Image (tube, rainbow, N blue to C red):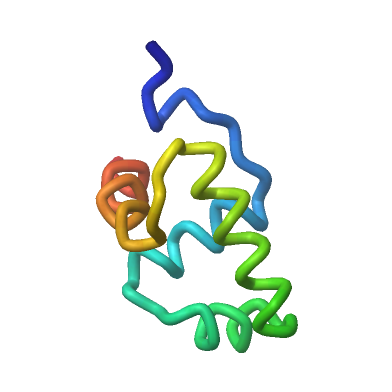
Length: 69
């Protein structure tokens, strides 16, 4: 079984995941990435697919786990 730490992410995906871990909304993520909200949603949706979760909120524990040293 693949664990969350074994999934390879691009730098942009890693940054997006860290913003999700900070509890930012999609609109706030878009502002931080300098993209439209629709593009930020696409980044979040791709992360949901990669990690096999249904909701963005389920990415928060994954983000926190991956941020551990």
